[in-house]
Image (cartoon, rainbow, N blue to C red; front, side):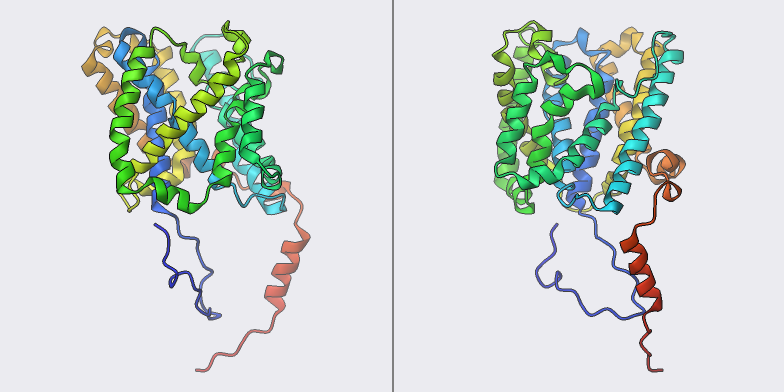
Length: 372
């Protein structure tokens, strides 16, 4: 997974050498793909889980770690983010612009496909999946602060605990989710490659088996005793009708349990190149596009068929969701939707003086003569 020390020493480059390309790590691409499959499958269970205590229990277990795992990886790859102009441009074109486009598209889709005339386009009120883009934009903008403070993770946990007892935050930009999921992003920021190596040891893979078995048992037990809303992190405790002190307690308890299950998930992620490794580069496509399929099927009443609410039907829906999100992560789909996910917006930005000077220096520098 990580290059050996000898491989990390750069060799002298010839003027004819192509520019170096950053090698992708198979482990992280595998983790992102498997996490996005779990996200899509869990969404496909939402119309079905009310009829099965087992499915509801599995759903809560998956929901306790699939987004935390995705957010931890997002934080890990945000460690180098700063306010450099080129990185701000990528943040705008790769996160802010897709949010505007997909929030508009999802709002119109619900309005007309679900025959909901009250559904208005509002960039302040993310619907369904788009909250993650808002959160990622805010989290990345605050990255320099987390790299500056002495105890970033305890501070992020404190903010999440305070958010859980502050209903006045409201629904604008889904800030409850932004703040309550913040510790997972900050955890990714402070993690190092060796931390991922630690959880991928053989002993951890073996230990993950009883841990997940226990989690499934607890999930089944908790179905009639615990509100699933806790796993969404989108409401303050007062809005859920619980005592105020349960908010901070549940933030800490769920952070601990989610972190444990996320570590077990990472322990099972293969580190070698697999048939699905290349799909890890397109997980945001799969994430944003699969919602149209899930909600479209729900609006059309396809989940109302009785046989889908039986075990074989639930397995069929799960497999269909996994296949669909896999297809949505492929290169052909990414080429079609690149205009929305990775738009070329050079026309919208001023040219950075440093980049201009660097290009001018490169083009005007005398070229070395090469012996024939």
